[in-house]
Length: 125
Image (cartoon, rainbow, N blue to C red; front, side, top):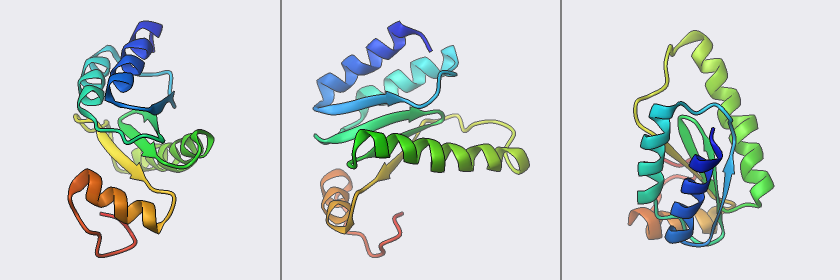
């Protein structure tokens, strides 16, 4: 992943608000770069959230940046790597957001602020 692309993504987030940006992988294709940059430019990232680029996902969370990166690597990437072995030959065409909330209050509040939705289950959707 080029430094120029990382700077572009960081600038897009600075415009969007006060968020931390972490790259979970150094292997992002040129085709993915433009799709990812476009996706990031349209994301509404609340203050205090960390965003980890873990292709083909963008993982967003309101825990510490180290914890969000750990979850992106040790849960999301771990699961994706294993699922690809048996079920998927290629990544999805679109960038997919994974929102992780630190607790129940954060989940219910941000579900409303971000999606205008009230969760009916603690397990996400």
